[in-house]
Image (cartoon, rainbow, N blue to C red):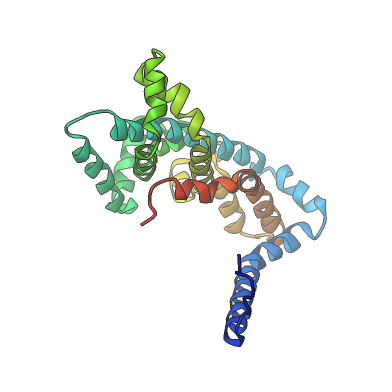
Length: 268
């Protein structure tokens, strides 16, 4: 809030105009691809969108369902496993906790390409090719999420946990009935990020989902693109439909994103 009697200098006004102009240009560049997508995909009418779901060669409706199942299960699994791991590293007294944390963080420096082939061999040996288990299980844990949850729980009020212990709750009871209900904003922020990341996966589903019945939406879109006679309007309509779930999730929970980042403790 400006103090009474404040007047912006000419240089300040020029700077403000320049900043607003830069924001408008950046927003236009960001929104232009989406405008083209909606115009070319849905501009021809809903018949094109209906054709996306009626195609026999590419089961787009099944692909949407597969992506939804994979994204929901991976998001729920990461929230459960990573929050428990982060809470344990933040609160459970353990002499080797710092070493465990360093080992988890160290995995973030390993390129995905290095673990891709070993992961494929493991999934193949389990017989999970063209199976939703092969798509879901490898993505149930995230080292980054463990680190973020730990940072958040380090700043969680200890007094609330102590009150729960005085009421006779176990450590698991404190986590389930005290910590989680008072951390819904942060959990929602992580859920948004995880859901969008899982929904947008392409390379791993492309390799694992070798049967069209287990294709995710991204693999189905790539099949439309690489077809012998690609229909651009059909491809754009399918792409427009495929982004609706993540747009909806983002619209409902976007207010938690900034709050979630600020609550991780990564302020410096």
